[in-house]
Image (cartoon, rainbow, N blue to C red; front, side, top):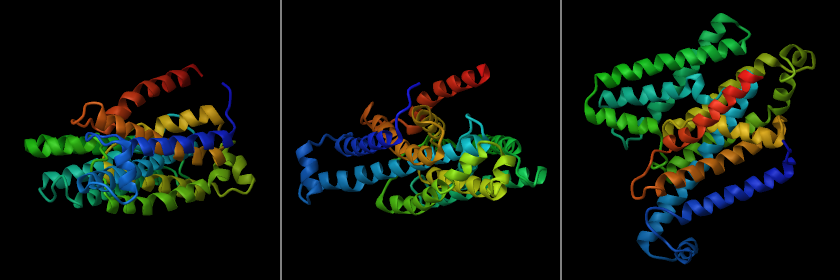
Amino acid sequence: MVRIPAKGMAITLLACVLLAGILGVRFGAVHLTSQEILAILAGRGDASARFIVLELRLPRVLLGMLVGGGLALAGAVLQALLRNPLAEPYILGISGGAAAGVVAILALGLASAASWFLPSAAFGGALLAIALVFGVAASADRRLDVRVLLLAGVVVGAFFSACIALILSLSDAPTVRTAILWMMGSLSGAGWRTVAIVAVYTLPAAFLLMGLARALNVMAIGEETASYLGTEVERTKRVAYGVASLLAAAGVAFTGVIGFVGLVVPHAVRLLTGPDHRTLLPLSFLAGAAFLTITDLVARTALAPTEIPIGVITAFIGVPFFLFLLRRSLRA
């Protein structure tokens, strides 16, 4: 496959992010003309139209960019760390923990679907999942063997799935419906406060992970070789896994479970630009931002005024891609 130079790919992806943002603000269930959008951005326009653009669509676009970029970056780091092309945040139990936290809070009647307590519960559940995965992996091997880390994530995710199934089987119909809708993923709860909180988590974590690019490149050769070359392998693994998990958890907490972004996007970028993490990580962030913004636009306009859960669309894209990668890895 012909490789695209990193600079050309970066320019292309920046243009895609800009275009995705424009389309996300321009189109929706309520029809607004380009002239109306420009008037609103210039500080004029009808009050109801201003509310739709400035309080609904624009925060939603920005939230989609932050969450999509964060999930893609976390997926790229975890794939490098575990040296497994099928690794992504949701396979490692993070989404299972977040979903279990939300379902438990809803079943206990401590929060409604619109409550700010739900993101806190989701983030707490994700942190618990991360702690369990770390604990299981460290108890088996203090050096955090990547194979044990991956298996621990799968086991912890299965445990939380069983907890969710048990809670839902004992809950009433409204609770079940709310929990299932949340687990399908959506950006409908976007607001400026949400955008600010997610940005506080996402942007520093993204810069920290991109700073590990050189170490991840060396570790790709082999952990023993990387250690000889001066890389602190164990410290890099702990920081990379912990920060990537927190990055994914922040997105899950406010948008629900949106799978396969961390699987599809890094692979697509890697196929086009190569495996150098100095370019792969920032390009994955840009590609993830554009991907989730466009996916959300499709989710809210394809069957307007009905909104399709965004997790459904990403699954329709991700499942065939996952099977393609699985078949390719088996052939290899």
